[in-house]
Length: 250
Image (cartoon, rainbow, N blue to C red; front, side, top):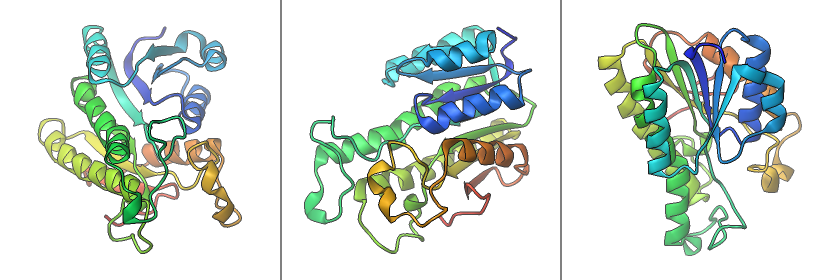
């Protein structure tokens, strides 16, 4: 594998958008290697990228996240671009089954905690573990997948209680992290990213109500995101942007 200086990291690499990101990185920036993290590897992508892709397996527990962070630190890895793509909206396989809540009566403690863990806790544990691995003195962009429904100002319909709240909490954590990182590593910028409604399993149950032309392919979102990251200004230290590079209200 190429040197792991100035590499890219894709966490949550099992998702459709994350895999499209890896493919786009392979096509647009073959000089720099990619590290992917997910529960299982993708043999097709691994074969396509060969030695330029390293796949690490994680169950997203705190211990697993810390172990990977320590491993990469021991290997003196430094990342210029990080994409944390984890997120959870629904899951019939979960116990109890998780669905976006429409009413207060739908709230269940376990579902609320499941959503908060996947959408808030896991991304922030990764950011904590990756702090020593962010390249020092270079422009670094850490992208974390948020969602427009996490915007408090943009909440006009209500519902989706746990997912909204978890993404709003994520945004606050990221804001605090951006302030801290700006003190110790001023070259690091954080991007909270809203990908729009993308044709993935996460949005599949809700696609019937999507306006024509607003259901995006994972490849389109990956291309848009890489363009945004490449052109992100040095200030401010954190932004909340959508797929079209437009600011989302907090």
